[in-house]
Length: 166
Image (cartoon, rainbow, N blue to C red):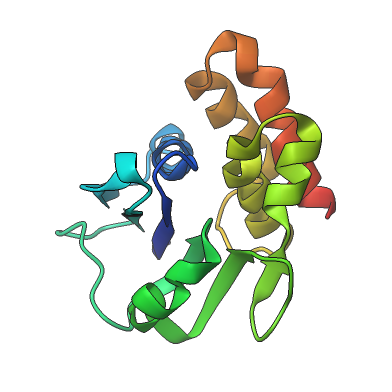
């Protein structure tokens, strides 16, 4: 069981929290997991990129054409990171339209729930719905409960479930 995932967005969108949730599910399953982040300009609205390798890998970095899944919280990052995805890989993108990828207006859904940053968990729900991740709904719920501050658990779970049903 192996999977290589990129998570891309801009500072403040929850890229790192989403990365932690996915990694936590792997840890809970006793599957080796490696993560890496690039977030130098994140505080100024710059690009944040996380890579996640689930399974037996020796390096956390994902080479060109190797990612199975791309989760884009910021659609404008697609041209920057497109080369990382395999030809048969899956993009799940926060977008208002749907081209050749799985698109969901996660930002709109998150705003309706009261917090724009919840779009990360809406995308996670969409990834599970489309079987793009090797995890179950219950495993993701458990990881969210483990990592989210107690006062935000219900809101985080609601966002995840909206992604599952959208």
